Length: 345
Image: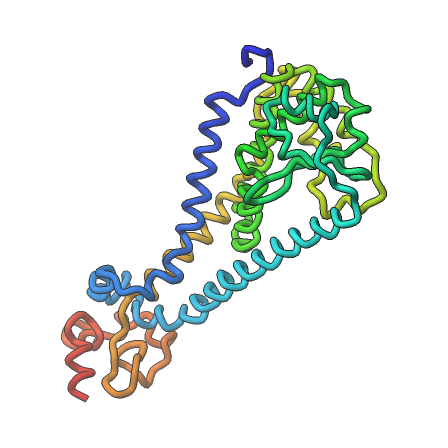
């Protein structure tokens, strides 16, 4: 409990945020082998001394997995492109939804201005909107603004209005619209790793909990909980809600109210063991294929790269090449042999 009586995330939530951040960074960095081998590194020389993994020919495996490697390039480029396009579409949908509405800075002496001052929110960040279908939300990347329905002030007490605006002030100061938009973009870019989407959902939930904590310190936990209950049943405006930052009566809202009343701390994580295992398997495959692609292939002078010193055989047929050779007649592309044989042709 905080001094105001509000449930606070505290150290456990801070640790969860750090763990989630570390996992997300590892997931992003984990795709680097897809492209890193295109950059000359000392690793290439070290891998060049490895000709076999057990009885498996590395050069043949390199050629066999080459189509898979290029498919990973397609996934990365396609995911990034779709993420950028979707974020642009979301921004345009928001602008179209707000365009027909009357948006004005709050007038001096307006109850919303008084509540904003008490909440620690700069009134210059406020925009009062007539007919707004959602009661209040924060939007904007560089300079976030808080959009408040004109009908909100008459429906809430001043203390509840202070609680609502204190909550939104945290989103403004933390630039949550930008942070969460980037996270949603990452989840779209790495759609083939569902764990990224689940982590983005956890960060979005966590942003609400942090804002609730601050609002509880400003206005008290009971008033924040009462405001959440009032806003969850909001009905107003004829404009389509979908493009706007939604505030609906969701399981998260119920858990936030319970948490403010001291019945719990964290909302359950969206991350599951299955998602973690799938991400680990996917990243293991990415790293394995990336290292194989970084393995230098023997060059047949004048004819480019071949899968090994047996250019006439298919890669699959030479995958277990050690079984076809003896100590008296070793594999021709073993260390030191392939270069001599290829150069002597």
